[in-house]
Length: 335
View 1 (cartoon, helix red, strand yellow):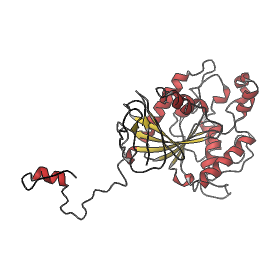
View 2 (cartoon, rainbow, N blue to C red):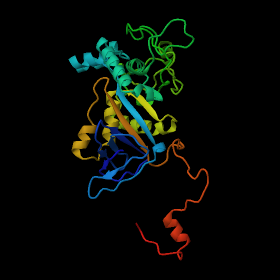
View 3 (cartoon, rainbow, N blue to C red):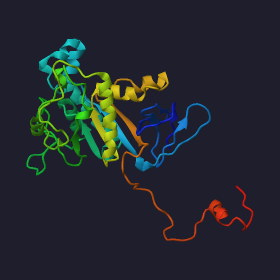
View 4 (cartoon, rainbow, N blue to C red):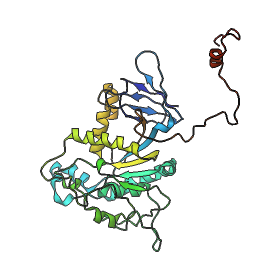
């Protein structure tokens, strides 16, 4: 059961609910979305008003999705940028790959998602089409070490991006799809410029790149850095797009700036303490789980676990309806 505390009436198409280990509190905002922390998933989600008496609301399970947000592991640009921020302008950091420490972080998160059972529940992995995010995605959520001679392509070939890593299997794991809308800030920093899709397809043969229209990176520009506000708008667009997917539990491997500005926009009207909690930057290879609620029926998923009842068919008229139908057959009293 999930209890939430809403700061303002939700009025938009979808909401995000941040998952906690033990207790829940809702972070509502208006006019765009609301966030909440949940405890245990059931077929409905309760949302209670923070001010005044509790007034719970119910959300049908088939109008909800669970998303697991992951920031990529440590990349070479993180190390150099820590030493000198001007290093982000270096062409040597083009499409930055993971460091050896980054791969250790990937292994640590992989162990966690398998130990807690998350790896078996995920229906789809969405990744930003940059080297460090795809390395993180396949390392955490992909199959085991690839064995030569198999008839299926690997998720990642051996030594992809100077990784010194073995190839990774594309079996016994969810499908992977690359989406440009969840990229990092566009422009100026070479580490945030992607390679051509045709080159990525050679490195990550089993990732689906069909949603990306252009082979070359036409979004990145050398002289203009994308504004934070535009990143947040792109994040909102991405969240709404998720409702077009049939998958119910989705892992998303993306970037610090994208996550920070998207979530900050969502929490913009929250209590300052809650806003601070929501708007914190992700650590490298950090995972946060959230529940999305479709309040305006953007999606079209039909209920799977709902059951119509009255099978086999028989009389089951509720007492209050029976009273309306037969008002003179006896005095009706509320119990």
